[in-house]
Image 1 (cartoon, rainbow, N blue to C red):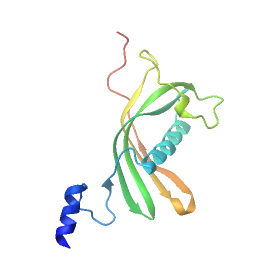
Image 2 (cartoon, rainbow, N blue to C red; image 1 turned 30 degrees about the horizontal axis):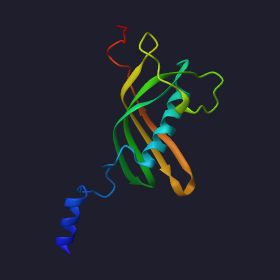
Image 3 (spheres, helix red, strand yellow; image 1 turned 30 degrees about the vertical axis):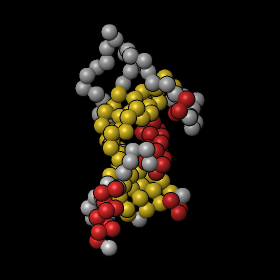
Image 4 (cartoon, one colour; image 1 turned 180 degrees about the vertical axis):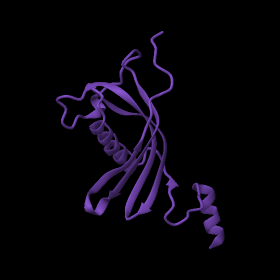
Length: 140
């Protein structure tokens, strides 16, 4: 049985998992994308910016099994051309990113934690940390 298990480890990426500890998952995982969308809506609801932001890159994704699942995401958020006013629940997929210029803004390495209890249809953003990019964007 050990031979079968070690053969399986060479086929799939085996990690040494510690019960209850976060572990890396694919950034295209369905749960990651759902948690990211929820975290982005939470961010947009808490900012005073006139424009909506949406993810421009997912740098890292971890999942932790707790009472439900906790997703720990490191993403880049970028300002879109969609204005906040008048959008109740905008479809961010239809919002294009700001072109190069004064209104363009990227919040790199934004850390988001989203807790979900799927069997209760519960999802909550529990932590958000971001900072504006150090370099102001300029047009060439």
